Length: 115
Length: 109
Image 1 (cartoon, helix red, strand yellow):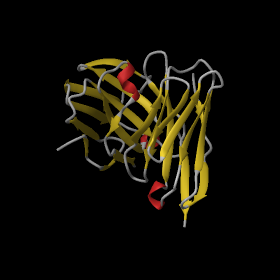
Image 2: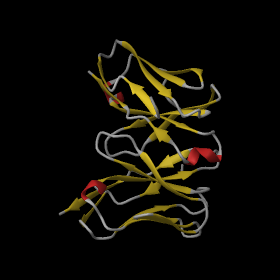
Image 3: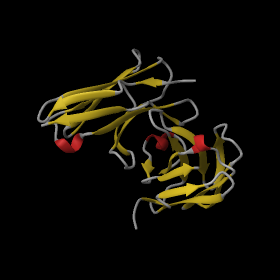
Image 4: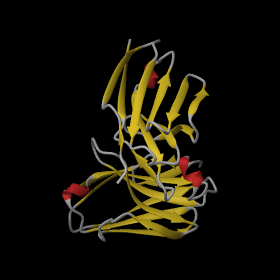
């Protein structure tokens, strides 16, 4: 496989469920990102990892918990979410976290619906 | 915080030229990128301007004026497949990309 792969593509969960989103990149990049995309709103940066170390937590509620076990994999653990968390969650990677972050490669996203 | 403004929607005819604008507060960003996103798809990188001026890549060109806080994406010889959302993104002082809300381009036959 090439590029950035996200699973699942679609997820429906109740407010009391616990689920995880998975992202895998096959590009040899050193930085990985989680973005949230809601209708009519700009992409919102949630988390940044550089060389498996979290370098940014953009004031995201604790019900979202990221994990980066290695430079190729990124997870977003979800628990006790709210209906307003329903959105498209996009994973991205870049060569590095500095000036190389101008060129992001995105995955196709995980469409999350919270009932 | 910094924000980028884009028109919400633009309509153009197949074969024509269309310009999509992006404005931001001056001295806010180090450089500006453009991404294309089809409905249900991932944003894909189109171009980057680190310095003022025009960058050309085939049918797509992007322009940046840092002193005016202004960028545009120019699409020539429009094709139906160009119907998509176009996102501008600026790199802030901590090297994070801040995105605009996107401009939805509709290409009509």
